[in-house]
Image (cartoon, rainbow, N blue to C red):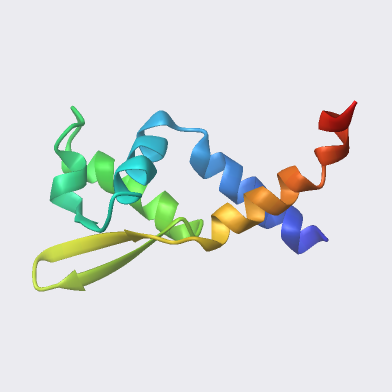
Length: 95
């Protein structure tokens, strides 16, 4: 159970930032390079990469580097974790 709590803590911490949520929304459309993902944001690339690293470390995305291009892909495991946690509280919606 403690392992699940740690996963959920890391998962929700990653989702707490609007930039990271926007990255996930974009990746729901398909894989994208870090450069493509960074374009809409007014921040330096090193700052943007911190968001990418947090999403990668928490299991929301997978990255692959080919030459100088790092491509990000949405991972689905964390959606299942969040869904299972929310589903555990479904009885509250049935009141």
